[in-house]
Amino acid sequence: MGSDITNQVQAADDTPQSLWERFRDDCHGYMIDQCIQCGTCSGSCPLAGEMDHGPREVFSLIRDGFFDKALSSSTIWLCVSCYACTARCPREIPVTDIIYGLRQMAVKQGLVSGKARMPHLFRAFARQARTGKKISEARVAFFYGLRFPGDVLPNFPLSLKLLKRKRLEL
Ligand code: SF4
Ligand code: SF4
Image (cartoon, rainbow, N blue to C red; front, side, top):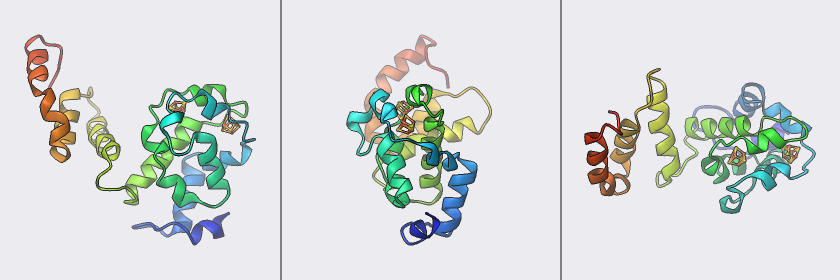
């Protein structure tokens, strides 16, 4: 599999091979080999209808050597980490964690469209998570809004009302 991927992934800092190795070793990627393609994960996923590839297909892409397609798939950004797939997988594959790993790699390698919203929301959230303090929705919205103000500004009046009623923390 490694040699196929070597020819397909365009990574910013890593070689394609080292990117694949990190995914395999640090993000449970090696467990994809256990997948029997039963489709239970995709059938359980509430967002599968919106994804370009359900989780089962993403794993199939990776096994067939199309790691770049997995990294650029909408699936990794639409996943809401509900863990339904992980809970129901008959092979006990940590599907959600693997998708999360793909998301991290896509961000790290710059394989993300500048117009895509979810990666920026993810970055804003991760920035808050890294502080080790309680995550402030207002701060996440602020940092996301720096990139996409049109998504945030319409909610400003409502945010002020929530702040006054102490239903929103800064
Ligand atoms: S539920 Fe598990 S075994 Fe079945 S397709 Fe999904 S990852 Fe593979
Ligand atoms: S964790 Fe993500 S991929 Fe799995 S079922 Fe939930 S939304 Fe779908």
